[in-house]
Amino acid sequence: MLPYYPILLHSSSTQWNVDIMPKTIETLRRGLEILALVQKKGPISQAVITRETGLSKAVVHRMLYTLQGEGFARVSLGDQLWRGTDGPNISPEPTSTEALARASVPALLRLSETVFWASDVATYTNGAMRIVEHTRRNTPFVISRIVAPRIHVLPSGLGRAIIAWATPQERAKILAQLRKSAHLRDKVVHDKSAVERMIAKTLELGYATRDASHFGKVRRTARISEIAVPVFHKGTAIAAINLCWATSAMSENEFVQENISFLRDAADEISQALTD
Image (cartoon, rainbow, N blue to C red; front, side, top):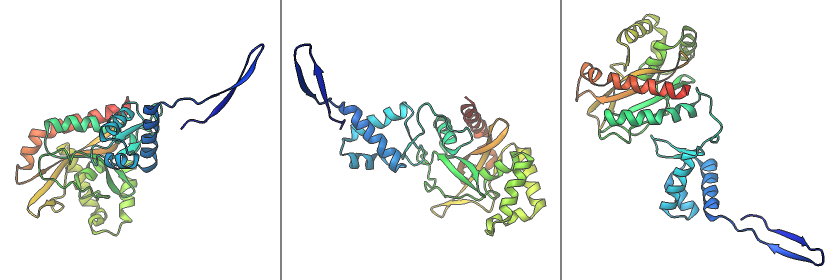
């Protein structure tokens, strides 16, 4: 509710007090209430916002997408949760997770219209790959919708894409961090020849693949593999994007022939969005 202001009006012959209570714009008040909730409690679902505000689903839906259209909030493609932004006139650093997530959504949506298998966009952070956006909820195929908080770098296609196309300085930094890890999935970093062979093979193929022993499993039957390519910003590989598929559906060669060009187009689109 806006504050109450008593206003004193003067006349040449008469003086009187007139109390004026400014009228609130109810739609604006509702929008600000929702924005405050998203900024304070985000990531937050539309259902929770509806429950906490007491507004109808339709009103909350319209308000949220209005806020998104104006640059005050955004919904994640992967988890369908709402998050606040820094505002419409404040652009996050191009290499930040927020900027990458924003840039990824249009590219992932277009990719999912052509390729029905799931796709992830991930960035390297403190010894692991972390997914910032994905289309696992958009695919008709049975792919795990549970996103691991940390993905091991060297066994995964996403991590291998980062390692292979990193600058020599950045690659050395990442490998040095991985050598400090005690996890079995990271122990291959101590085999310098194996790492060099992996990098050489990845660069030769033009895309990264998952370690054959590092298949994801769905319902204990389907083995899930991936191909991945880097996302560049000003010549530096800052992220990677993949496509995951069940190996029982088609071989790697078949999958690559059908989909690698679409994956590269999506990576280029994200790179361009980060530059604009």
